[in-house]
Image (cartoon, rainbow, N blue to C red; front, top):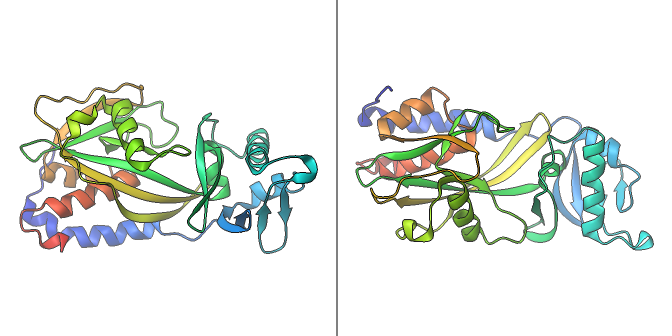
Length: 278
């Protein structure tokens, strides 16, 4: 594995972040419309999704936006309306799989309801991803290779832990759950963990829709006695890398976009000079 000297990394960070920003800050897909839920702006629905949900109970399509509300005449609460939308999008081939997981629906900073995870991208709904930068006492970074069976970014390298917060789930609890599922970590293994912090909000066009996602990260130092061990079958390999090796992998586009964001943030904070984190 290539090793990049630390003095080379620092000046390259800003350039790499500018390049990454162009890839993760994008306008919604062509033909998308704003989506409101219970009167609050909540997402960006694709043209294909709009065509397929038009006429469903609780859905009103106008030239400028798509509006979703409860449907009292049909005795459907908002949760049922959203479940019907997700099922319709699945049946019409608008979704990438079906996860049987619920994620929160947010509008203007407020939690409004929940919906099937697979439906959030065609609707352009906000998601919240929690990540863990786990460091060894000697300063190396733990990274994980995604399973070849993952529906997104198979075989690419990732942070040790990363996943979406579930419906109604506290973000810190989400990170603890993901840490156990993906790396077999227990809370006592991460006693010196930093609180979660938001790096940024991504806006990225995807084949199935629009990714609007808050990326959050926490850092910790894992004792030498703790060895990550995957529990859910979504990780094929763990590896410890130096900061120079991690940077070489960033330059080689070996990481997912989200992981690259998180790892760059970690490198900025841990460079010996500290100037890049200022």
